[in-house]
Length: 314
Image (spheres, one colour):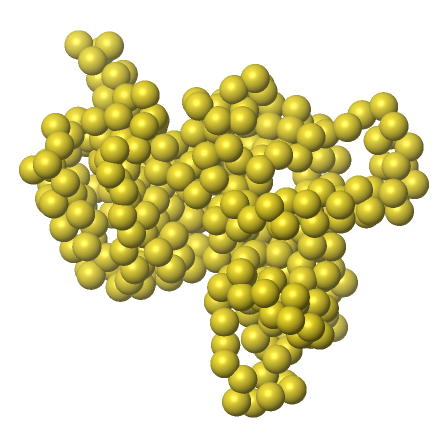
């Protein structure tokens, strides 16, 4: 059995996973953007679980660009982890073999292991959360690129660039991430109308506000789905994959799935060349089967592979 830890920008999901990919125990903890506190919390999680289960190793996944040795070039919204190697520190403090990988890569591997990509050789996984993570799988292998940056679709620019200032406002991260996109854009527009408005960082609440007739929620959700559809179609055109999987907590929402697929179809119909190609080539867009558990399961698979490869070398 393995301790598996999925580090998000706002929440850490962790649990114990067996060799078949079954989650035996699961819980959550708030993500602290302070490296010392963060490492202490992870070590506490490991120590609390190792007495309850027979643990072989620890698998972790996190947002950002992570090198094979665990060095974190970038860590998404967790700024205190940039330039750090928490893998090494956690190994030293716990004595366990530890792996750490990009969260979208972990999710993609999980879907290949026991999810909706078991019959795909070439596919792309998008994970919507605080930002937009991504993973590219070619011939059943994660394609990480020369510096581990492959799949960072959240950085791609999909809107007209502003005349001045930070052009990152035109990226998929700022337009179609659940927190930094949908929720932040709703709060910004709402506060312009009502300075005392309560902020929300829950996508479900924005959907509910739209149903209640909130004009700003409707406008922001329309932009959210349109920009996400454009981003997905750009991925289709760039990689011609067997399929595209959408993960993250919002993928549990049936309304999200229906509206996204409808918007992809709408955007395609307005692009003359893609519309013609769609009559003979159709790239399926599926919600990740493992939903919000994909990161935990994928991280477990990667530490399992690491442990098994050690035995093979003996």
